Amino acid sequence: MGKKTGRNKIHRRIFKVSILMAALLLAACGKKEIAQDEPGLLLGFSQIGSESAWRIGNTTDIEEKAAEYGISLMFENANQKQENQIAAIRRFIAYKVDVIAFSPIVEDGWDNVLMEAKNAGIPVILVDRDISTEEEGLTACLIGADFYEEGKKAGEYLIKKADSLGLDEVNIVEIAGTDNSTPMRKRQEGFADAIAGDKRMHVLESIDGDFLKSRGAECMRILLEKYGDKIDVVYSHNDEMTLGALPEIEEAGFVPGKDIIIISIDGGQEAIDVLKSGKINCVVECTPKLGKEVMETALKLKNGERVEAVIHPEEQVFSDEQDLSGLAPRGY
Ligand code: GZL
Image (cartoon, rainbow, N blue to C red):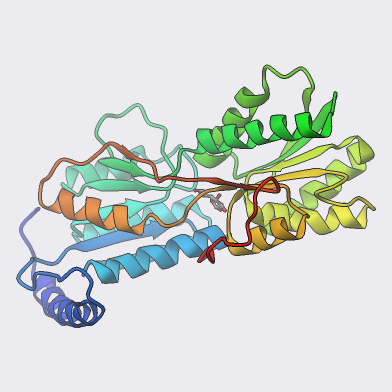
């Protein structure tokens, strides 16, 4: 890392106090001891916003794991604006953090600011979502879900469901996530590839719901006005949009989960409860709990150790084919 400035003397004193408190806390609950002489790590984290239960769960996990690992966190919420993320990353560079981590709201437009981080000798971890760039070496690691697999699992569930219902034609509408975001692109691609060989499957239309509950409701209203009872399936890229869509389906006189098959992604508690009630048929898990891997990777980068280029968490599928009565609380 570059030569530390005077700012760090104050930072280190604060850091030592927080380390001592964290060590006492961890010692009390028998968790990993933190070596008190271990030089502190200052992590700058730029979060997209608070658009969904998933995002809020991700933030909570990042904050909890930073405390657990004794890492000082400079956390900035971009409120869904890329320009706020870019400004935050510039502040982290000016502050000479040891490592930068961020969840890019969209894939394009990061080259300049990440080149500034690279020139400042600050490694960058991508969390949750990816970037699109021609440049080499702008980031050290991507920690996040395999969104293509999530989409594929959604498509595979639908094929099995269509078989069990004896459907010979399946008309699908898609409520997609934020345009040009990794989860939106890959969930769409994985789903399309999974159903491509099945002649019964027809995607009538895909509308951008921006991962927002309010937009999910708007999209559903538009799709119901346009296609009405032609709709057999709603494939929604996240629970927020699904939860926004359900009242619109009921308002239009249809029973979600029965008249229209509902497939969602994230797996937050609210959506799982609705799945258990029968109004959603399938929820593909997308875990927001990435904090442990982020902190361990940040520590490795600070110590000059090699890190994996991509770390995907394990994820499962919850559906109306399973007994979910014993499912543990989701925590987001
Ligand atoms: C997925 C994450 C998505 C969630 C949405 O990892 O990027 O963003 O699926 C969230 O709920 O808004």
